[in-house]
Length: 401
Picture 1 (tube, rainbow, N blue to C red):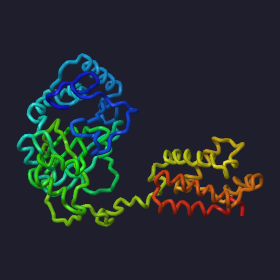
Picture 2: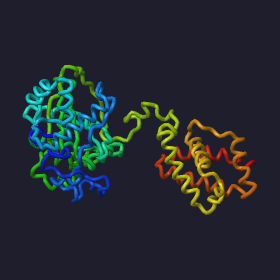
Picture 3: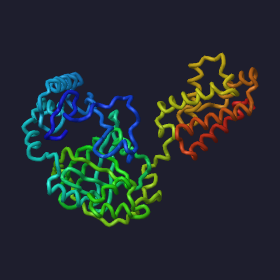
């Protein structure tokens, strides 16, 4: 919240748009007319803080009490020019830090960038960005560039480029659902000081930004016109709502070393490869374990039951028991803890062979459905082939050969 804005009922600042409902239409694409500057059509209300272990000695009932108190204060529509949320202020009272907090607010927090802050930003080579989607799911990422890659447009706006990355867009996706972000820049090599900047964000395409080139620094225009991997894919503009210091006392002083950087490279070694050795962890664990198996079983089971060729094999069976078998079967294919023995497979399919004539044709169809399922779950092709090999190894046991 901006230091010089007022809170009203619902936790939003006066003049802001209402909370976006959960069933709201899809957010606009970055650069679309619906996402034009100054409209910010994708604003949402901030979720209420929940009780968590992170609150230390504060118990859940106390958190509920503080939330009720905060709601009451909001309901009274009393103006509040302090930065932060109501519960933040209540915690200051609870832990008797109000004087210390007010001293910090009054001496260190602005709703714009002071001249020294602007100079500091222009020297930085990296920043951390925290964001959350409309449901409060969080992401924190880092951005790197040469000194000055973060441009200060005015005391209320800054902008930085988005270069080619891993293609996930977790942070950008959050921004389009919920434009509130928090930036942190730290100088480890000279002054050992940091700067927090909180505000509203907008994702801007290169072509859209060029429409305002008469208002932009020339180095921004020049960077947009660069060719190859050095050209930004898009830009992120931040409207400053809070700016304050990250104190120096615990920041280590580091010495900068030379390192050759190939901006935008897809070279696996240059990107760090499998540094944390995740490929040694079974796929079952990497994709979410038992919860992922539940989702996979739902998709797989639905496809099997609706299939004209193999659906009849599941008639007149205990559906819940069969579902557990399917889950165990998928767990095995994903490299999980459950492993079928050849005897299990033979006994489990013997009746189907005798009564329905289970054959290679049916086995092949189940394998096809399995492949459709894991493809729908976005499992990488090389890992799908590995799972298909595991399934193929069970063919003779399933068909009692």
